[in-house]
Image 1 (tube, helix red, strand yellow):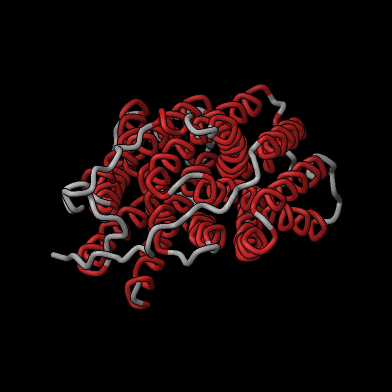
Image 2 (cartoon, rainbow, N blue to C red):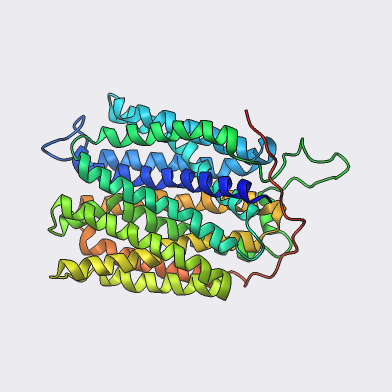
Length: 411
């Protein structure tokens, strides 16, 4: 693969994943404002915004499950651009909706587009990565998610009651990225139409994830992804509100969200390298275990804001990288012909955890049990994630075909 082609893949896939992090934190950071007494919007309640965030993640899950087979038919490149177009257009529409119900509909459709972005971006990165560098490729790509989350938390701190500008910003940047993708993003896997007709290729599907001894790995990956995304979305959606309930002002809770995601970026830069060098399974177990301990520690009241932010920073290092290492597992577990399908279904089932996280945490907020009960819940979830990762067989080297060459296409 040419160096220039891989650079465009890295940059554009990273940018695509950045929109995912920006979007979820933009919504989470605006919930206290939209539901607040001073700057409430459409009379929305916490229960209303729990519905909006949940239906959005239903769309994300649908998009993730559907995108694997679609990308096999139309190509990774076109699938990614289509998903980004749908997400960006409906993100722009979200603040303009005149009712909570229509806000939910728009978020559902935007979620379908967004849900397809991450699995395809990760698949493209893994397909273009050198052998033995799949974990590093995955974790580096996912730093984009947390950079987006950091940008959203800072933008929310600046915008405050002008929350609509967060969604205008996300939508405009997404649309502005599309022309660059059209001209510069190469294809990493030819479609069935482009492959030589002399090669009879099996069309992979969900059934193949359970054949040839893959059942245990598939189930373990799905459970670990579910638990990992429950943590990611539960924390990023409701942490500002939880910390507000713990007695901190909204401005301080937004800074804590920034610190959490800054720690995530640091963890991803380190975790992928360790996973490739030391083994993805052992690294994933350590990361989930450390997450459980640190999340439990956050349930303890701390008088020092500096100490609290330090614990939050280190929590971010482990919690979010643990989830991404599950995606790296996919690249090491399945043969190349099955990676896109495996990634899509792992991400799709994981997104059920992304739905459950905000919903369960929102229920705890409504019941007045979110602090410290939310952190007890999160610590237990991390333990289940550890046990699921432990049941996945240690990946064995998979025979690779020739190194993928991106197909240069453009408008």
